[in-house]
Image (cartoon, rainbow over all chains, first blue to last red; front, side):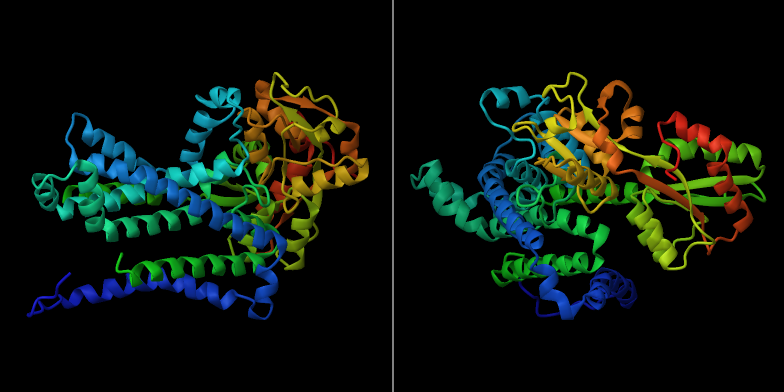
Amino acid sequence: MTRGSRQVGLPAWLIAPAAVGALFLVLPLAAMLTRVEWGNFFGLISSDSSVAALKLSLRTSSASTVLCVLFGVPLAMVLARTTFRGQQLLRSLVLLPLVLPPVVGGIALLYTFGRRGLLGHTFEVLGIQVAFSTTAVVMAQTFVALPFLVVSLEGALRTAGGRYEAVASTLGARPTTVFRRVTLPLVLPGLVSGAVLSFARSLGEFGATITFAGSLQGVTRTLPLEIYLQRETDADAAVALSLVLVIVAVVVIGFARGRGAI
Amino acid sequence: MKRCAAVLTALLVAGTMSACGSGGSDDSSSGTGTKTLTVYAASSLTSTFTELGKQFEADHKGVKVTFSFGGSSDLVAQLQGGAPADVFASADTANMDKATGDSLVEGDPVDFASNTLEIAVPPDNPARVSDFADLAKAGTKVVVCAPEVPCGAAAQKVEQVSGVTIKPVSEEQSVTDVLGKVVSGEADAGLVYVTDVKAAGDKVKGITFPESSSAVNSYPIAALAESKNKDLAQQFVDVVTGDAGQQVLADAGFAKPSP
């Protein structure tokens, strides 16, 4: 974004609600910091179950981010670069998981890929057992995170426009070459920001996971599930682990900002 | 892009509004001069206490009973955080002890029911489970509660006493989650309470096992110190511990409090 030489003044009355909004977002995080048992912080976050949960979360979130890119980029291209009947409907449906409560997503996944779901029997015949596996966690995360990538990439594609692609095409480049040499480099910041958002969303996924995948240490119990469980008996550990999740989120966002992606 | 953003914003706003709309109970709409009695009770008491609440309202004109059902430890955490409530009924002694330890309770808690574990399987019993030892068989997908919650602690105790080691495919957060996995057919078997099997009707089949007697969960109830209607709170406790309450609880499958 380029800054104009003359800055238009901000209406003064916007400042107070803006401050309230910012405070509302920041204060709870600060309040959590006051509850962290610093003396025992590393003891609390280095228990077997915590480390297993963190590792599982990073592993599954990375896997689902890769899946989001693999399927989200083509999907965004289809939505941004073509027109066909029912496209609006498709876009709305693809964006649905953004606003759907994750637990609803979990139930929907259960009735699709669960043992008695729509495709469950087919999977069982093929020898694939999805239920209670790490695969189920990745599927739940991909389901909720994919729309984030599609939305941000489709936006970037539309903003970039098709002019360079058209020029490349008239110079004789094949569609794949145009996609690889022109389109992708143009929208790379949008793609990175979409991937970061997907990763962050996967990391925080809770409702769909607990509904669809279950909860077992090292297999399906990701960090948010571990925090929720620790809360039952050890509030200090839950707070410490929450802070770990906040730190990971800050690092991810910071990395993306550093790259100019967000 | 603009259009897309507008759709997105609209969707997000709609989501937020519906989220805002669903919360909060309005006490103001319940007529003039009504008193509200707020009861915090373990999730496993949902149907029985709802019924007792209706009876209580019928017997006490101008009194409205509202419930907050949840995991016992969640409820204690809310009470410790200053949630305004009149009565607390816990699914285990440990959580009631937390409340008494923090002087949240008026007088001494009274045990009013007990519950034991039962095996729940899908109606067609795909893994052919017939006793507790079958849960340890390889290939049988068993779901239990995590040891951190009361039903999981009970399951762990039964395992220790019986010497059977279950390798669960999932350790769920609550007994309802366990039941859900069995009802949907994802799991071959789950360890839940006797009352859960009864409440689920023909959606699951229950298999009782003698080892369950080694872990009996007692349900204590108490009026709360912060209550503004202490007489009314005590009357509700009396109803639950009295004949009417005991009948409703027995009908739901609860056993008498263990001596």
